Length: 523
Image 1 (tube, one colour):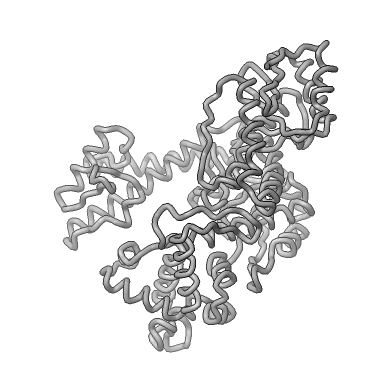
Image 2: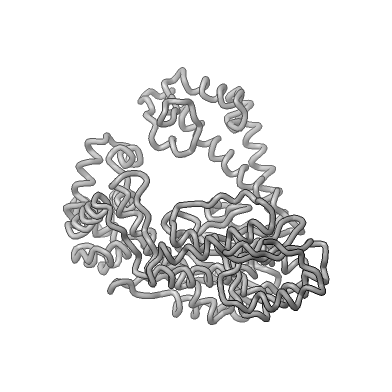
């Protein structure tokens, strides 16, 4: 039953709120509603500013935990409507984050059926969660929801953008595009239209380059670039190189346009999800900032009078893998100080070092590609393309890596057997680890990324407890960037190292904090 809320009905609402049970909240363009799992709800029009303020006050004073889909967006809108500090809405919890913890990789339908029905549906979803969650997973739900709340202040304030640099970058990219069209007689950036895509495929075909997806259909997806077979002829190699170069510019322009479209008074207001990926990794959308090209990072600036300070965990995946597998050879390689140099010595022996005893940079890079390829679940074909060698030769090198770290291989095989048996897996913090979508070879990557996500978000929470949530600027993969007053930058650097550096199953997981300056850049 849905009841229309009016000012005289507020006392009745306050009484209704006293019963302890999960409540759902919904805010549409025109209505606000709160409901419970029995189907009861209260609803009124958003335009009633005074009533909205009294309603929010009643919820805040009730001590009830209230749940909403995309709670960050809802709380930010309420904060703007009522001119509140977003921290005053900490009673509003994110059902989306809770769902991502309990059901990793599964997105709920978000088609609105009206505020009252949405509120009731959210309440029912939250009531059902404990049936599918252990005590440890329920604890992970609460910690993840608390981590999501830490970022609301930044989402409300937004990220200042260097608009002049943005315009310069766009102008240079456009000039590059025009020059490429004049040189090649085709616009290789035009993949958004059927006509443009068809022309690009027709330009590649004469030299034997065919980009097709798994079903054999023509595609210009970036995911195909490292999988396609390129003929060894000079013409094919040259044309493919030019294609990659121009498509890189197209990707850069796409990101610049995305940021430009999102500008509001010189700032963007992205939405941060702490558990968006299947493994629990986060994402920043609208605009997406987790995949911004390193060369475009200086577009993001600290507010006036502040500077950015950053810590990026070093070799997170290898260190987490060592903690999980307890492989003594991998642990020893990490303790050597340069994992990839040590691995290259185990694969290539004396060739791995030059005459001065320093690591051969080419072989070290190859060892790094192989090691990360194993963590990411890549096989001989993908690694062969990445290294520019035949798959059979890549297989030999992969076997050499596994031979160097037999304990890691044993752990990987055990994970695969657990997946085959259908046994559930959980991170150290109690979050379910999803079954791999890409086959058994991805089991190790799923587990490593899931554990890495928990380590990172826990570290963020510790930093926020000292520097305050408003200092949080951006969290990208294994890097946390904070924004602090310039005269507090050294203190922030110390806090980042003290609070983030940790130990996972006996293995140090660390990074070095650096003061970046006003603009974000590679550290």
